[in-house]
Image (cartoon, rainbow, N blue to C red; front, side, top):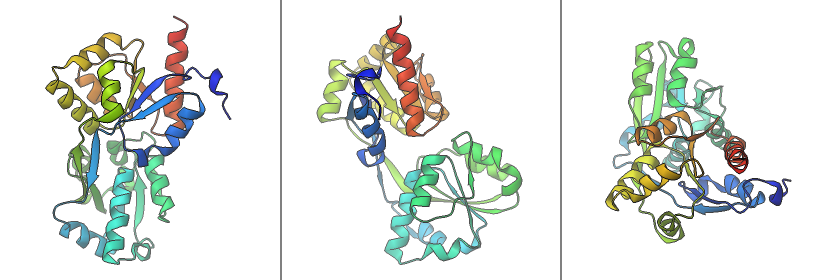
Length: 272
């Protein structure tokens, strides 16, 4: 158990731009260190408008060699839809192998009882094609994703000769900041903001633009003492494209990595 007063996170206001059901363990670790986490989701997730392609894929899982999972949201979407259909996907895993983008996604899949064969070391979608090219080449791959997912991964898979079937497993929507989260944004008392996806970054930028862009300018000015944390390299790239510098990037998407990135940042700033 970490002594809260001994952590450089003690007393820090840390805003998490992710839904509460996805950050329970992170919130617990932050609170154990005396931090003050504030939840302000910037995106929400909903079923696809047309579920027919997803339903067909779930019923025909044995037609594929690999199932590629690029987020825990994809796991939840497949699990919920398969239950609604009454499809026992477990019977398909004897012939179908599963690869996950990172340990969080793999943990979600294994928690559902799904066997995960491969986990990308770089914890980003494109890494799946790069790291397992020999295994995916000329294979039939099912890729369930968000409606906003980029084409980088399926394009890379097709370049190595994979037969890729993409299906929208869930839709990503912007969420308007409200309540305590909006207040924390407005008064400028935040000492860290955690972004977990490019979609969350885009929604933050769109929301801030509607308010004159003051918050982004403030964060840019204060970024040496305000931690702008990117969970994953793709999210970090989205923040850099927004003009932010001195981004704190977690080494990977796990809770320990996020905690380490925050503690390292504040330990360093307290010495200057």
